[in-house]
Image (cartoon, rainbow, N blue to C red; front, side, top):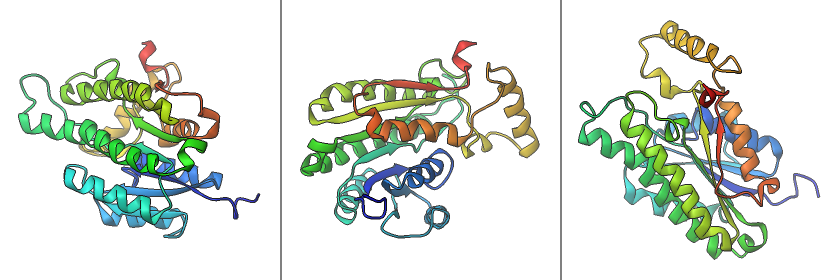
Length: 262
């Protein structure tokens, strides 16, 4: 059966307009097996990403959804499931990265971090699993959930209290749901990137020169001698979504250039 005639499996990617989310969509589209649906809060960014993926078509779509507004999540997922012949996989990639320790993390910052990094992934999983269980194809082909966490969820980053704790909780959410959803043939796995070149770091540096100095300094200390690129993480996401990973669940996979070895 050719790629053109094969039924595409729908993959929903949050934070799909840039960085790891966009590169994951690009890599998945290259396989010819998947329909990618990007989710984000900025329409312009999503439109640009969709255009770079070949434009809106049966294989590429996007939906605007602010994950901090929890009332938007389930209706959006339900709309995607109806419009795109079910949902095969969810990639929870969107996140926020605030600085702050015990004395400087405000209640507002804490709540927003957990809303985006933990509550939204849970609500998305809840809605996606409901759609998967209604789809008779799930029993045969399975379903896939991939959470993008962080090495900070294993070894806390300095002065990122809310972020590190939220990612540790996301790791445990992954394992807990893997046990629950296994009988439904739905795998749940987690990827913990180290430092990757994404917009998340740009906000915390004054200019490009300072940002590049940060990447060079940190990357040179790692065993592999560099920080990661979004495509490095996208490759791991593609694996966990693939048929080759059908017997892998509850894994917390580290992709960090050796950072945790230091």
